[in-house]
Length: 239
Image (cartoon, rainbow, N blue to C red; front, side, top):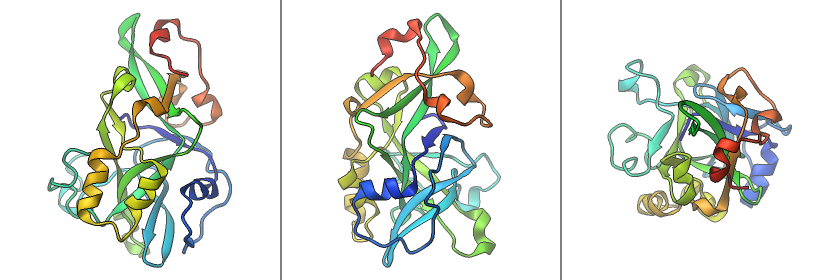
């Protein structure tokens, strides 16, 4: 998975689609989020479920354990195949389970007319429904620890036509599994099963080329996800 995604509806929209009969125990902005170009190291909304209800927190995209801080850039993804067993994410697994709501994500594909160049594609749900990326997060409510929080998005192997776009994809969970993923009552064994088997299949997405403006983290706006005509990639389009 490449390091950009979009989240532009209001948080009420994502929570409503989850159909969770729970109170949000901290405040959040009810206006549209309007982020069409979320980049690593920036703060963006994640959803967590605690014993008292739900929390919506703005958390930095990217995380490292304390012993790895400063040795390399904070990873933004965790592989589904190893996240429950590896040392790196041990302090987040499984109690740091969270959801990163989204509308779609971007990947860069080699241009068929010039393999040295790449064209961005946007991948979103086929039916227009919001997406829920399985995530692991470290969130501190103490302002003095604010700088040490972060989250990663779990990724899985791409399948079917999405392999033409990238060999990895976010672990997008169907609504019922998204609810189960963040439930405190979900066991470690069940969480591992969701990671291994729960990803939404490729035929429930659509993808298309978009303009190269998304490559600049300073660019924003709906135009970043507007389809463009690209004759060189007509065989890869799925509308």
